[in-house]
Length: 221
Image: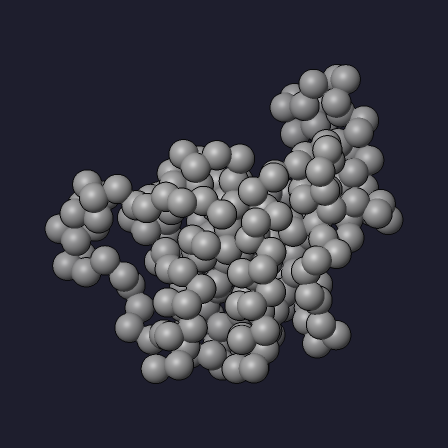
């Protein structure tokens, strides 16, 4: 788990602009969903082509949070990356000698597509496949339709990488008028610096940044 905090100068900047650090005084469990992003073998298995080692550390926290949210009837949605032809990424951002392994790990039907086995996935949970960093960009997935059909307006974001798929989804969610909470202790990146950079971006422009326990406290108010 990343042991970082939002820097004091960022906190002061936020306080000066809006008069408070956190956006929400309470959260409505009936209109909230947890998105668990890319917590699959392709990103968590040791030695996997797109491994994020720190993501394994947040598994217990995600399991605990998901269990508490199910008790409050909050939907848990597993958002997994599935490559469906994204040459603009693989042909440009991945070296030729690593490209085939990366594509195979994220291909439909691959064992690497499965959720990490230490995650506790329940029958009532929902599953969404995305083919871009953001699960909410047009054409990437059915996530927006699922959320709108359930009258969801608040998204709790967990998973990996904090600064890539989690941040991209958070940004698009805010711009689609969803309320966003980035879960600081249930997200993971490749470094503390990248993780903190996203937390600082989100709290200034795109949503709130809370721990799992802080989020549960707001749901219980």
